[in-house]
Image 1: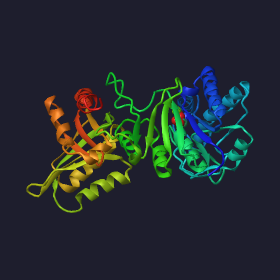
Image 2: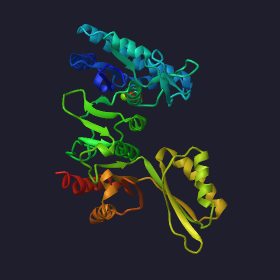
Image 3: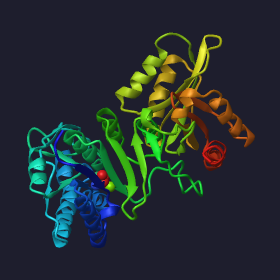
Image 4: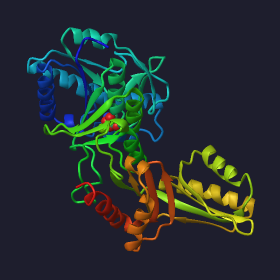
Length: 409
Ligand code: ASP
Ligand code: MG
């Protein structure tokens, strides 16, 4: 599109956590300018700044105004962009920092979870033509009334991908403190493998099922605008993982990641009437009360009675139980039970689309370890089982061993 060779890079909080880290980032950017790239850099707030700002606000109020909270949080990124510009100047690289509002990152007015509507490239391109490195504050934008907005925690990834999209660049580097995307959580599996490639859909599915590496909206954007994301470490020069369209992947694993979600609880309502409209009433009620429901399983009815199990976030459990109790009374169901100690263990992979017997093999592995499956749900590229939380680690280890350690050799 443009005659410039543009590289968009995003550096997360740890990558710019100290003055020394900022210097290291400046050196890395310098290398790219020497290779002839026009570099656009998106940065997050330094280290734990955003958490600290939130904690500070909470000392003053339990109910901060959305507008003022975004005003506050956006300052974190303003610190890191200006410092990075100074670090670049120090090593002889011309650079200029911009806030979201200065480059017109226009968003809707939903404070703390604003969505980007458009970004103007004029000022960025002008600065790039002046041979400047352009440094943009991630995570922030401005609404049509000039209020500062933020995109939700971790939103700088989305800022970077949106910039790559509007600048028409195919590749976007996301620098973090890990070497890429792994097949499992290294706190649980001693040596998970680093994936060379992963598809957008697998990344989204893994994030939904508990393993978030990137801000999910950034992956949705990348998919929509066909931007390849290179997730890599700012602490070394190793190649990381490329998040890309599945059609372009060289190797498609049946299972490319194993994960567990341990922040949900299970509710079962027994003996509800097996007739049209019951599920509709129950889940409409949940929705109206803003309870996020993840898995839903209904048993086949017998004697005109059925039972429904669902999972909700543990933080919503009390609210959800009250709603279910109301429904139980209305419908004459026999009981509402809940279980907090559950884990949703999942296996995700695009290779599932073209293989047989994956579900059977997963259930077999779990049964060999005497793990009882309480609920099952599947998507095109994922299989999830609710099990007792006690077995969460064991199940992940067993699945990783069978599907990944033995197959990705
Ligand atoms: N600083 C923000 C946060 O901590 C945005 C980001 O890091 O991407 O959530
Ligand atoms: Mg961060």
